[in-house]
Length: 178
Image (tube, rainbow, N blue to C red):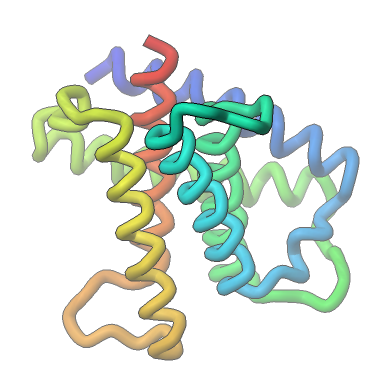
């Protein structure tokens, strides 16, 4: 489990560094995005990964790694939006955005550790393609919950689905880097 924690942190460090550099380039322009827009951004990335996994020819010179990183960062942004709400103008400075990112990642990693304990690191025996399919399934669930105005009868909420997508994407990146 300590190996998983270290590998998780290494993946998140790469994602966090990209997030910080994009914040420096663009500021917090993403704060104007409504939740369905973030969900759709994640969906596009997951669909591209699935296409890369199924197609013999790749026409854009970016592979699965950058797309999984995008899934992680957009999912963290969605969790931040769930907490702070959508704004009309960018409102977070770099320090505030990093603090919010770190907070959401810490909660998500804690969830991963709890589930990883209970499931006995079953993800290590899964294929990257299966993790991609699980992310797509979670996205379809989130879209349905969004269409239901955030209401569920017996299921976990949108936040838990975004956290699962982050964790599945981290697992996929660990596999791809092995």
